Image (tube, rainbow, N blue to C red):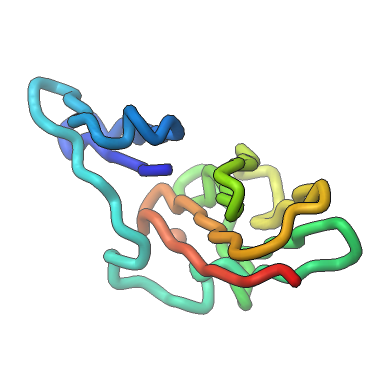
Length: 130
Ligand SMILES: [Fe+2]
């Protein structure tokens, strides 16, 4: 999964197909920028996802101190990318808590959780599910 942003119109693109992930994404006549997690200088404790497992649920909070959820500054999406290649996504609104839960459906191994903040970009953390 790759996340791109157009620096002209600010549109964010989520590319989930591994074939398409190799392609250039063009917006406003220019290549969109591939976002890297944690490239923005901002408070780690409010952006790095905190991930735990309870039973068959993956529980995610952004972050160790809740990220603000206001119309001006909020977490728009949380994704979990599993070792088997499957991806879960939760779209949030400013009225939600910076929190989501996904059913594991028996999936184990490495899972990388990403979140996107409208002001501070992409952040991630990786854990291993036994
Ligand atoms: Fe933020």
